Image (tube, rainbow, N blue to C red; front, side, top):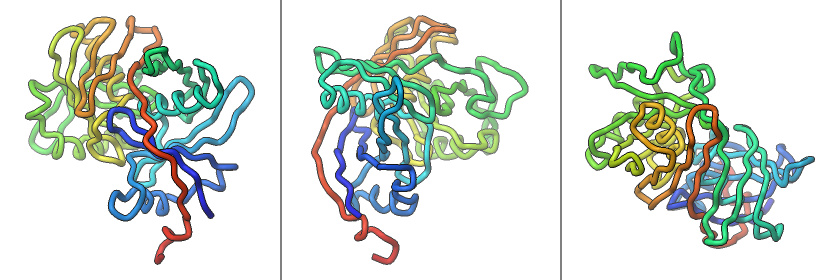
Length: 280
């Protein structure tokens, strides 16, 4: 079996996009891991699988991490899909459906993509996260340390830690420790946020099932949502990640949040999946 794919990235968070005629045609987790390998495969952070249209929806899609696990949402991936589909359809607005909910996106005249990421959900059960009640900040015991985190769902789960410097943040050690903490039964994405000014943060994200990436769209949304809830940030915030800059716009509780940033098509290719089967 061969698939034709498009390689894309949003600020260095990279993807392959391909169509599947049905859910049964999606490659297995083991096969996706092999394809994601950057030395012996194609190399990607996530695979975005298009499953066709539905009434009122231009495309349905599913998201798989480099470790083969399926996730609910991906902000950078959604921007890439909007860019790709808008050009295919010959219009600026695209409506899509993911496991994390419906996404409306717009391809702007300047080439950037704006996507409606919905209303941030701070209910611990939405992540899920084990907590007795909803709070702005939660204590989280990791080894001998007690961290202070914000927790929010952007269609997928996020924990956000405020740090003095993202450059000095212990992403490699705290990232996997928080990701796999037993209070997050389905694991969690972990953001390390440095507040520079009310309209500017720096961010590094340790993504569930991937590790640290150069950019995380839902992570940027989550960080701004948590920071704004704490009174640290304004309605429009520039988010600097290792791969570049995104902008998040959020009026506040109950309002929908918008993510704006680039989406780049790198190349198209075809791969024979038979060469990646176990033992091949």
